Image 1 (cartoon, rainbow, N blue to C red):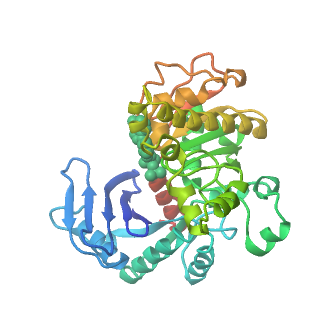
Image 2: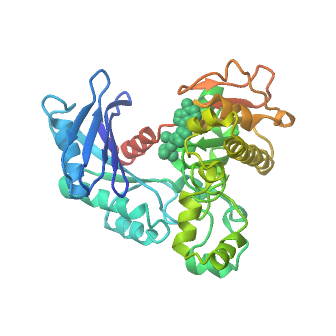
Length: 397
Ligand code: ADP
């Protein structure tokens, strides 16, 4: 009962082989620079040295072939033959309005994913290439697609409809989709377990704070609103992404600076966020180190934390209360400063952080004070495990 989880980017591929009998990770790896010189694979297995393969891989099929060869390698592998892999779970970014849960992949699914490529031109095409490459190499192994958007398909229409002409939704599918769904779903389930409650009875606000960042309002286990939108550019200030801005800035920049749509998109996606404000870095560790004595570094962090606080408050309103707040992903799991600053001033909602308990990184912890009405948790996310669980369930292993 071993599930291979694949996450294909345009020139990279992440994988994990998970033993579903005890949900342990047998091996995890990363391939970078597919299609360019210097491509290679790094595999980690607990208790062993990192294993590195430097080899040119012209495409994703080459890359997946090397993943399979590495997994069955006599010295560095973890399984004897590829048949031990009972199914494959693929992370797919956009399932549009087609999918509100994971699905076993067949020709019809691939067609739907292709249609969704228009909505996620950077992400869906490499996801599809990864699926096809896997199918070519493992034609008899069942495969499942797990979508970043699926968890948010429960949002009510007043939450996902933009106040634009309604035909843009009908004819062009312009609406809020939301992303990071697999992560929000996973951490909210862990939080419910920690509280010893049925998730159906909880109002949860989940803050996924990594390079990309989003917050989700979860009522009874269902997403009712989230900060990312039609694309992953909306909402919070992020490492390099602007998040919510006045949309008129886009046309103003095009007119005043004579920028093309591609240039504005590049500016909003790659040169904004805390990198844009600080002028220093998109990495929060660099910003923290620079903040003392550097006004713009401090300002970028202030903007980041202020937006988190603002969305937590507004989602408490949208949910009609809040039982718990979760921090996850690179910043949420590791930065006690970010968690404390994002909750500062939320005492009126019944949120109180215990500074000592908050002094944790990379592990599951309750960080709220005894007297806090709202429980606050740091919970490392595990999207791969979530993908493997769905894959196992759908393939009825
Ligand atoms: P993604 O998966 O979106 O690429 P991650 O969830 O891995 O991102 O988060 C990466 C970010 O986490 C980095 O930009 C870094 O700023 C932040 N990060 C990692 N460790 C720490 C830490 N100890 N303190 C503050 N930020 C951290």
